Amino acid sequence: MIAVKQLTKDEIFIVHQLAKDIWPHAFKDILEKDQIEYMLEWMYNMGTLEEQVQTGYLYYMVTLDGVPKGFVGLEPNYPEVGSLRMHKLYVKVSDHGSGLGNALMEKSIELAAEMDLNKIHLNVNRFNNAVDFYKYKGFQIVKEETINIGKDYLMEDYVMVLDL
Image (tube, rainbow, N blue to C red; front, side, top):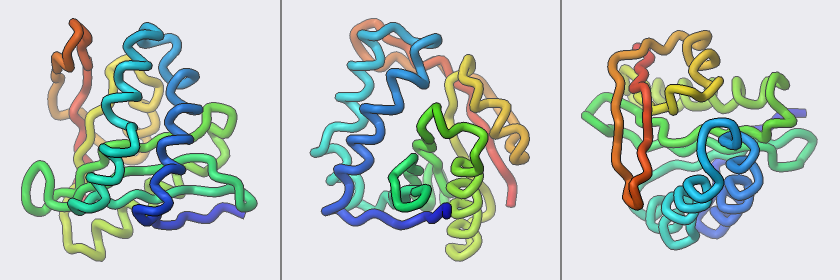
C-alpha cells in the first residue's frame, strides 16, 4: 500500500538517508560523481534539513508497504506569495513507474489547494528524465536557468510551473 506522511524535525534523517541512496543513481548519467557528492552535502546535510523544517519547509515521505521510497520538499509562498515551491521530489530509481512519484505530486497539489496557493513552481535539471513526468502532470517550462553553485559546478535547469 502507498502512503504519504509528513516528516517531523526528528524524522528528517529519513530524507538524508533517502537522498544518499537516490541521488547517485538518479544523476549518474547527468552529473559527475564529485558534483553529486558536493550537492548532497550542500542540500541534504542534517543541519540544513533541520533548519529548513524549523523555517517552514514541509517534507513528506512516500512509503510502499511501510518501506520509505521517496520524498518531496515544499515551501509555501516561495518564490512569491501564492506559489508552492517544490524544492525536491525524488523516488528510488528502482520504484519509478510505480505511482509513488504521482502520490507525492498529488499530495503537493492537495496541500497547495488547502493553503489557497494558485501554482506550484520548481526547478529541474534540463537533462533529467523527470522533465517528462512534470510535463505529463501539466507543468509548463517558463524559462531556463544556469546557476553557479560553487566549485565551478553548474545547475542547468528548467523552471517549470503548474497553474492550479
